[in-house]
Each structure stands twice: as C-alpha cells, then as structure tokens.
Length: 543
Image (cartoon, rainbow, N blue to C red; front, side):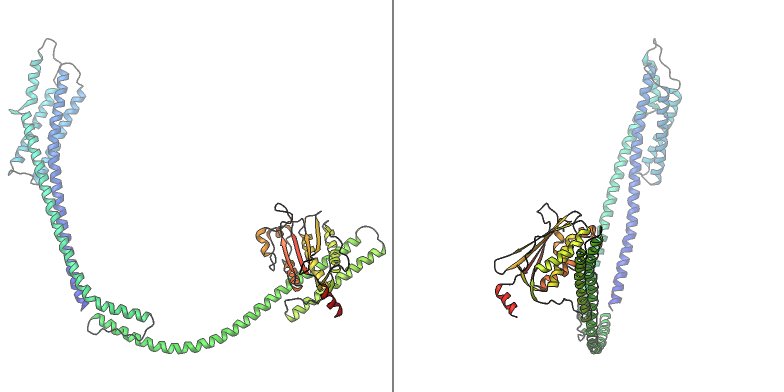
C-alpha cells in the first residue's frame, strides 16, 4: 500500500520537475532573445555615434589639409575605411533587427533606419571621391570659397541635411535601445515571478507529501526500529506488535518469525556452548600448566647454561693466569713453583665445588646455591680472592691495592668458599673494566654501631657506568653500553650472581658511578655484611 502511494507521489513530483524544466528552457530562450535585442539596439546606437565622430575627424583632416597645416593622406584613407566598415556593420545590425522584429512603430523605424544608412553610404562614397582631389588653397584665394564647396559635400546629400539626419538617427536608436532594455527588464521580471511561483508550488507539494508520509510512516518505523534494537540487545523473546496488510506488517511478521527461530537456536547453542566451555576450560588449564612448566624448565635451562659459562670462566682464567705468571721469565726457586701449584690446586678445588653446585642445580632444578653457615675469618676468603685476582690483574698490568686484614680480626657468619667467590666476582669485574696501567683499590672497615657491619669497597679507575643504567646492573644478562664497547665478550651474570650471594649472607651490595666525584670516572662497589657480635661468637664456638 505504502509502496503504491509513494510511487504515485514520486511520479507527480517528477512531472512537476519536468514541467519546471520545460519552463526553464522557455524562460532561458526568451531571456536570451531579449538580451540579443538589447545588444543589437545598443550596437546600432553606438554605431551611429561612432559614424558621427569619425565624420567630424575627417572634417578636421580636410581643414588642416586645406590650410596647409598637415593632413597625412594615410590618415584620410584610415578614416574613410573606418566609416565604410561602420556602415557595413550598421547595415548587418539593421538586417538582424528586422529579422527579430525590433520595431516599435509598425515598421516605420526600420524604413527610416535603412533610408538613413543608404543616404549615409552614398555620402561616404561621394566624400571619398571628392577628398581625393582636395588641394591646398593658393595664398591669394579666399578660404571661404574652398570651404563652401567642401561643406556642401559634408553636409548635403540628395537634398538632405546629413547633420540633421545623423542626429535624428542617434535619437531614434537611443529611444529603441531604451525600449529594448525596458522590454528585457519586463521579461526578466516575469521570468523571476514565474520561477518563484513554480518553486513555491513544488516546495508546497513536497512538504505536503513529506508531512503525509511522515505521519503515516512514523509508528511502523518506530516499532520496527524498537524491535530491531531489542533483538540486537539479545532480547529474542520480544515481538513487534504490527498487524495489517501493508509492507511494514509483512516485515514485522518476518522479523517475529526470525526472532522465534533465533531464540530456539540460541537456547540450543547456549547449552552446547556451556558444555564446550567446560571442556575447553579443563583442556586450557591443563595446557597452561604444561606450558608454564615448559617455560620454567626452559628458563632454568637457559639460566643454568649462562651460570655454568660464567662460573667456569673466572676460575679457569685464574688458573691460566697463575700458570702463565709462574712460567714467565727464567728459572725460579722450587718453593715458588710449589706456592703456584698450591694456588692452582686451591682454585681447582673451588672450580670443582662450583661444578658440583651447578650439577646439583641441573639435577634438582634449584635456582639458589647451597650456603654452609659457619663462623668465618673474613681475612681468609679476602686473601684467597686477592691471590686469584692478582693473576687476572697481572695479564692487564693492573695493580690491586688492598691493606692487609689481620687474621682473626673480622668474623662473619657464612660460607668461606662463597665469600671468596663473591669477592673474586667483584675484583674480576673491577679488573676487566679498568684501563691498562690502572689501579683497583680495596678498602674495608668495621662499624662499631649496632648492628655491627663490615663494609668492603672495591674502587676502579675504569669506564664507569652511565647514571641511567645503574638501576639495571643487577638484572640478569644486562650489559651497559660502555661495557659492550670496552669488552664485547660477557654474559651479564657476574653482578646478578654476586647479588644473590650477598643476599644469601644477609648483606647488601650497591654501586656508585662515577667513583671519584661528579667529574670523575670509574665505579665503586660497596659490600656490607653483618658482623658476628660477641654473644653470637660465643654461641657459635659452643655449638
């Protein structure tokens, strides 16, 4: 029903638009015709004015020539040609005016125009013949006699006064021009009102059709939109309340049937989805646990390999350095060889312990090294670490400066081997990232305040660490920008392992860079370990 009504209204509006288009074509043609008439009338009037002006210029030329004050013959010919062209143009315009019916007095205007052009054409022809024979007057001849002869040629033709003829023509053409302009204005006014009337009529018809269809379509469209919105929200039980025989009722019945089918399928799908979600949840949990276990295993494997490479590199380097220093130069006393072998044996023993720990970590997937807690004289691991680090420093011509620690003066609770490993890691880093001929300074100090602590500072004169990288130096596998440039090889595990060893001994480890003031270089590592108090020491001795 709505489709048929809409079709009729659209056909009616299309017919109105076609009629408006036909009216527009007619109005355009009429406006174009009036514009052409006005332009022709204006051109004819301008032509007569120009012809009068050219004739006056020719009269001036003759006067100059007669009195011997100039008068170039080429100027005369140019003026005559201009008058001939002007007359030819006026003749063509007069014919066009006749074809367009431009006559306000029953044809008399056209007759007068053609007669004036004929007389003027004859006069211009006579002027051309006469002026070709004009000569300068003799000195004894009166000027009045020559001028009267030429004045007769300029002002008279076929018994008519040419000045009066041209003046009447200009007045007549001016009146014709004003008449055509008034006619054009009247035509444009009629066209304007015609267009306004047609536009208003079409607008009123369109508004009426819009108002009618808006009222007729508002309720069914609102119901359909409301139903579609509820279905989009998932409320499949909603039904659109439209009953009738129009198109919207058909759409409503189709949407209601679709909603019923979707509701049924949704219930079935919900049940199946619930079962699948339960199964997927169980499978996902199992896969997540398996994946987590694999990731943890892979992470531990990577860390283990990194720890193995790092932990084995330092002792083996120390053994090689000790042997190279011993073999360097000539023959040595036997006791020096025995001392070197004893140091190599000690380092090898430490290397074997490290290998045992790494193997134990590999077998048990442990991430922490075992720490044997016992009373330790700190001078022993310090001397061991200094002995091993000296071999490393000798290869790079670096001096290690450390005041001797009296034996038995500093007691801590911990693992002597791990403490030696910790100190060797710190000294190894200081040596590796120092410049040749540099000095690594080791200073230690006991605090008397509670809680009693041992502070060990390892200061180098090396490359230092940028301030923005200090917070990352204890991250596994992190190597600073300067460290990568100074020494390409490296795993970034030395400081993380040292941090783990310090935490296992309930201590702290901090870095300061630059180590020698705001404008200095190098790095200072500050190690703090808790000291055994007298009661703790007595209890440890009793146990």
